[in-house]
Image (tube, rainbow, N blue to C red; front, side, top):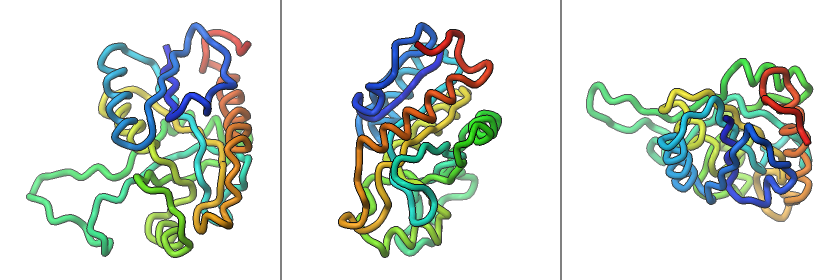
Length: 206
């Protein structure tokens, strides 16, 4: 069984029911995503977690309406200055999570770019913040749940991948080109292609 996790149901309204896929609506934001996915993984053993949804893209990385696969996703767990937290010895800080590299490579080979993500609790709406995240974090796409879902799957030792449809440009909101439906269409394209990859699903798409 595959767990297909999205923040809001409207993001996956295009999906047909499949006997090998269980859909989970997590709610918006990293805390809701981490809680709901962790609870689902505690109740049942899944062979794969697929995090899907819309996302913003940083300047020059992808266009509104594109579908992209997120190879790895980060969260800012440091000082506002960018300096690391002063932690006791022996403490490991997890601030980056990864999609399964084989699934990423296969999805990229199907024609979808593999980009680096960042997960935020507040949507980027200024050019200054967008430039900083791109420069300091290498961010190419931005979501509010990606890191949380990938990290929850990693803790449960379940392979995971993050697929996104681009709904806007990160930065000044008046220049963002926000288009929810275009993002969903990009998501539809990449999700459909992913489930057509050999060995992903146990039944054909309907």
